[in-house]
Length: 522
Image (cartoon, rainbow, N blue to C red):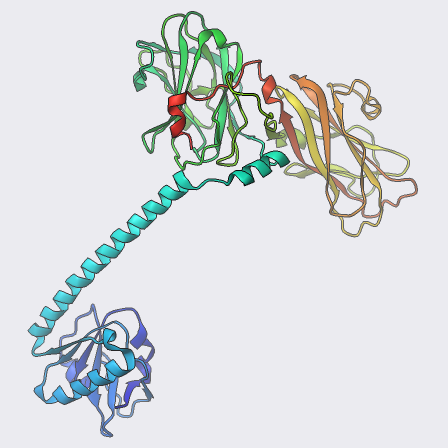
């Protein structure tokens, strides 16, 4: 038996909505109350004896444009046969359906009145609801298992860790620095040693970082305290109710300055609401911590301990947050760890506000742009014949500065000049460009590098002989080779970064979490 369908409804036969087939003409279907939740199809034999499917909600067309059906319609819940005379047609339709689509696709054949049909549809609806509920439950279980796997079980292979460590491609990076300190606050004392304090007995500081990629923080100590007490710090994930790390150290080991708090491995957990709880246990005079204005981050204002003095304005602890590649060993050994190869020193980008104030230190006169701040951290400094071009960037103090680096490239592809030179020199404030070029009193300087290919960047690095604490000037130099042409020679400095000598941070050793908390660090 060949089955046909009205071309006007052919595409809708394979749509997702559930369908019902009424064995009867379109005129008979229009007289039937149609349920809006289903797509109704009328099925009848035409004058040539062909079985035709058409939309039951559409007026009958005397000579419809018919297309042969090779595949039965999808998602058909039932074939309704209200008239006894149509039994043979229904049987022929079901045989065609089984032959072309398979037994699994057969819809329910319903004989009888509308009440009988409604009972069948109600049972099918309940079965569908149960099936969807089970499928949704399985999906939620799979999502939970996948999330658990990513958060707790996925690890970087040790071979990759060693490769990255050996190539020194994964230094920790400074991801947040609080505003400058304007005052201090005492750490609250609480009772028993080795008992976690309740929230009301601690200073609580929400951190503007998630646990994923968290490597540690530096906390500013104004006064180290005295006595036999200990400073206790707990890193809490508020969204999951977990204590990710706990640090403890006696007052006697503290000094004024930055206290480095580190984890053994950069965290891979996906907790989002981190909070640092700080209290002192034991006896003695507790330490005092530096605080500064929360400024534009009032949501990160610290919450003092119960009954403690509240700062006059929204304030936050003076701290620095460090991040890295999740799962990698930070390389921090703490006081009792075995000696190991030191980790790469942390790297921070230079402040773009300072770079934007770059100034020319040797006069250049040209009818075209030859010097200037290009936005972001990009600085243009063209070289000229018989003269070394010079500019300088004044930088505020960067504690424990060990090196400054940047990249330089010719950003004009049409440049044909080769052996262009560039250099970077770190000087104390107020030095002349002549002194910087000669290297007199220089804190650090790179070698002259040569650029032979347009758009190909070279790195300039000026290493300082010792960790520097105060302000400084960063001098940039460019030069042409002897007889070199200046056409299209646009030399651009960018990617300015500072390297921090972490082992020199105020002389305090990095503090690792207590042993019993190591299981929570991941």
